[in-house]
Image (cartoon, rainbow, N blue to C red; front, side, top):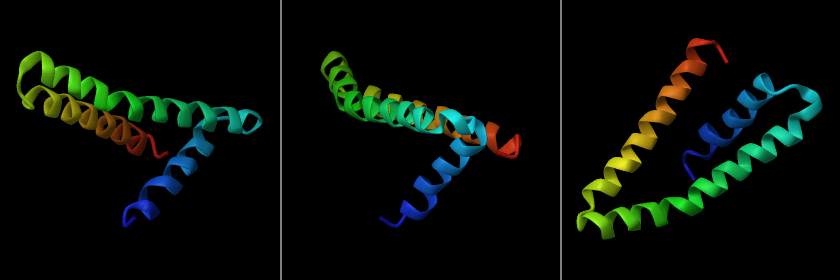
Length: 82
């Protein structure tokens, strides 16, 4: 709950700068759908990796890699003054 003020409003503010106004609802819907799909698939992927390797390391590394990809995307947007 502490991070609510930082994450959600910023996401929609960035969407308003990137997506044209006429299709804003569609863009936010697609973003929301992809986020929900990723949130639903993450436990399955991590569980598969744990079962395949017998270790939690692979699952944690995948989560760390996804976090780094997200941070890189945020850095690109910040450098472009979005």
